[in-house]
Structure formats: C-alpha cells, structure tokens
Length: 74
Image (cartoon, rainbow, N blue to C red):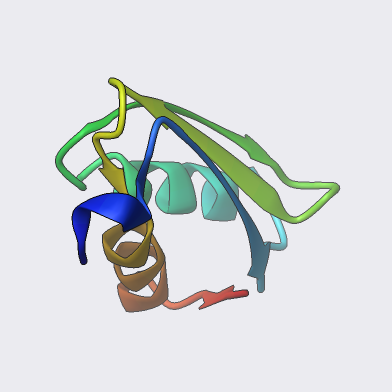
C-alpha cells in the first residue's frame, strides 16, 4: 500500500464476531500488522479501532489479517 494510505488511527467494521473470544481473535490478528501499537474491539458495535505511530498503520494489511482470521471487514 502506498504511503498516502498509511494512517495513525484506523477504524474498521468487522462482521462475524459473536463473543469475547471472537473480539480477542480480531484484536490479536490486527496487532500482528507492523505499525499497530494498540487496538480496541467493540463487540457490540462490530468495530475495531487500531492506533499506531504517525502514519504507520497500513489499513489494507490490517483488513487482510482480520479476514485471514475468518471475519468479514468492510
């Protein structure tokens, strides 16, 4: 992904989370992406918010990691 697609904060909608275990799986998957320093999953809202250093998060890689864990990202 190009430099202009890198962000400091990233909010994604995630479909398919049904329990706290799912939320933990999504958070763990997202945190494997370089640049992600922290993440909060809101199970009720079906969302994940990742934070990182200035312009260090590649949103496409985060989405791919969550998809690889078995969830739909949009």
